[in-house]
Amino acid sequence: MDKIIFIKPIGKGSPSIYSHELAKRLEKYSEIEIKQISTPLLSYHELFNFLKYLIKNYNTIIHFPFYYYAKFALFTRKSIISVHDMWWVDYPYRDIYPNKRDKIFAKMDVKGIKRAIHIITPSVFSKNQLIDYLDINPQKITVIYNGVDHSIFKPIIGQNPFNFDYILFVGSEQPRKNLKTLLEAFKILKQNPDFQNLKLVKVGGPETENFRRQTLQDINNKNLNGEVIFTGYIKEEDLPSIYSNARCFISPSFCEGFGLPTVEAMACGCPVITSNTSAFPEIISDAGLMRNPLDARGFADDIEMMLNDESFRNFFIQKGIKRAKEFSWDIASKEMKKVYDSNLGKNEYSRSIKG
Image (cartoon, rainbow, N blue to C red; front, side, top):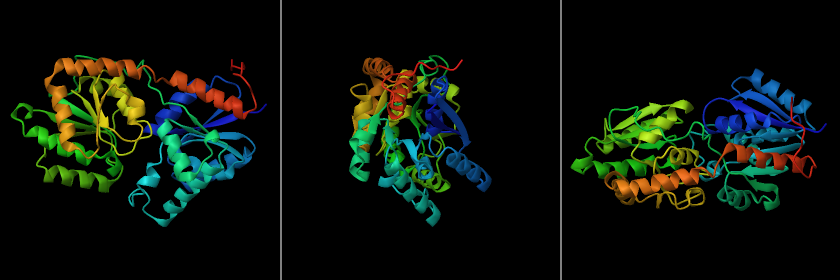
C-alpha cells in the first residue's frame, strides 16, 4: 500500500514542536509512517544511516517538516516540505552559515524545495515569499496554519514565576528578531519613575554566542544591566504561567512566517504587541497592537498603555484568547491529511486507522 513517511526531529525549538504535534495526530493512520531522527544529525554515522533510509524508501513520499531538511529531498523521488518562512534568504547571517560547507547546504535546501511535489507553509505571507523568491508554482503550495495545544496554553492566573512585574519577549537573538528595538523601547519606558521596578524577561537561547555578545553589549550601552532577565530554554509545560503573568508580550521581529510564541501568548491571556510586517497582520488580525519594527517610541507608547490602562489591556486579552482559538493542531493535522491523500491519489480521507 502507498504510504507517506513523516520525518520527526527530536530536539528543542519550533521544528520539534511542529513535528511532534503533527506526528502524534497523524500516527493513527496506517498509511503514515513516523520516522524519528535526532536534530541536528551530529555524526557521520547518523547522517549515513539517514541517507541509507531515504535511499531504501526512494519511491515513497517523504514529508520533511522544516526547510533545513530540504537538502535530503535530493535523495528521494517524491517529497513534501514544510517551509515556515524565508528568513534564511533575507538574512543570511555569517553566524548561521559560518563556512563554505553550510553555504553549500543552504543551496541544496533551495534545490530540494524546488524539487518537492508539494510545499506546506503556515501563512499566505510565506506562500508569497516562496513564489517571489524561488518562483514556485502556487498550485504546489498549501497554506496550513500552525496550531496551539489549548490543553496546555491557557490562562494561569496567580502563579507568577517571578516576584516582579515584567514584559515578555520569547525567541532567539538573531538580528531578524529585532530585540534591539525592544531594548530601545524598554530604555524609554525605564525613564518613567512609575516603571523603575519593571523588568524585561527574555525566554529562549541566543542562537549563537556572537548574538548573545551583541545583546549584552546593547544592554550595557543602554544602561539596562540587571533590568533584562534571561531565562534560557523553558519547558513547554512551564511557559503558560510565564505568558499568563506578563503585563504584555512583544515581538518586534522583521520576519516571521507565523509567530508561534505570539499565538501561545494570546491563548494564555497575555496581550500582544508586534511589528506590522511579514505574517503578523495575517495571524494577529485585530487581536493585538502592531507597529513599524523600527518605531521604538511607538512600542514604548503601546507598552505604557498596556501597563496603565486595565480596561484597554483586558480588551486585548479577550480579543487574543478568541483569536488564538482559531489555531489548533487538530485542524492542522486534518488539513495535512488532505494534502497527503491528494498526493497519494485519493479523493477523500482515508478510513484506514491503526488499531
